[in-house]
Length: 86
Image (cartoon, rainbow, N blue to C red; front, side, top):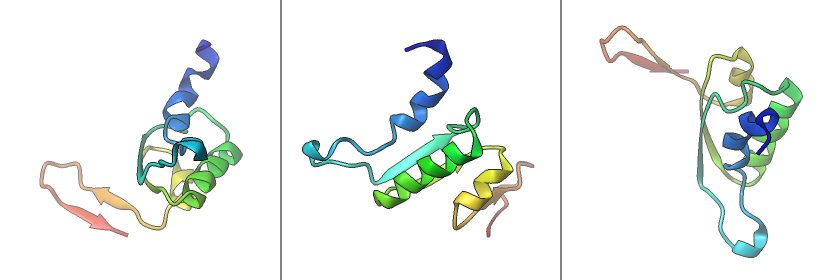
């Protein structure tokens, strides 16, 4: 894989397999998977996953991720174990 496309590998690996296989993932765990692509490309990837019925869990620092999800889990990060779901 060319170095210029390596950052897309985690995302493409989560897309559903071709219909001929009869299988599809139920859950996609994306850790900074779309951090190196444009917002329109991010939106297209998330829309494709949602349309396929895939539940998406994202980890990232990009504020645009908030608009691509229905819920947000915030961890306190101070060792207390505190969290909140918005």
